[in-house]
Image (tube, rainbow, N blue to C red; front, side):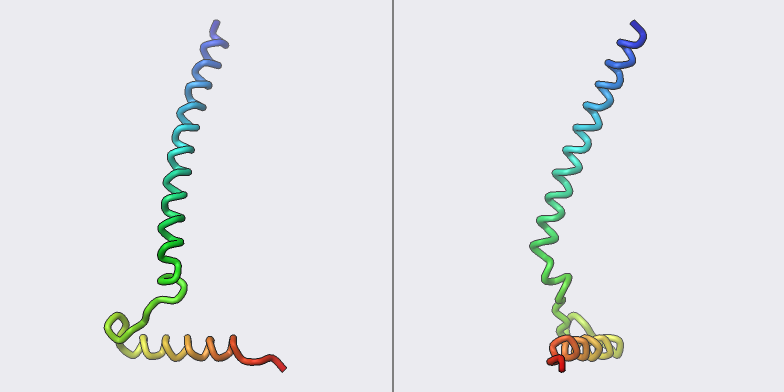
Length: 76
C-alpha cells in the first residue's frame, strides 16, 4: 500500500506541475504577443530630439547612420 500512496502522491505533484507549466506557457505567449506589437520600437527606436539628447545621443546617431550606410553599400 505504501508504494501505491507514493504513486498517487507523484501523480498529484505532476498534475500541479502541469498546471504551472500551462500557466507559464500562457504568460509567455502573452509576453511574446506584446513584444511582437512593440518589436519595431525595440529594433528601430525613435531617436528624436525630444526623446534622445546630448553628446552620447549625437555619437550614437552618427554610428547608427554609418552602420546603415555600410550595410546598404553595393558590394564590388
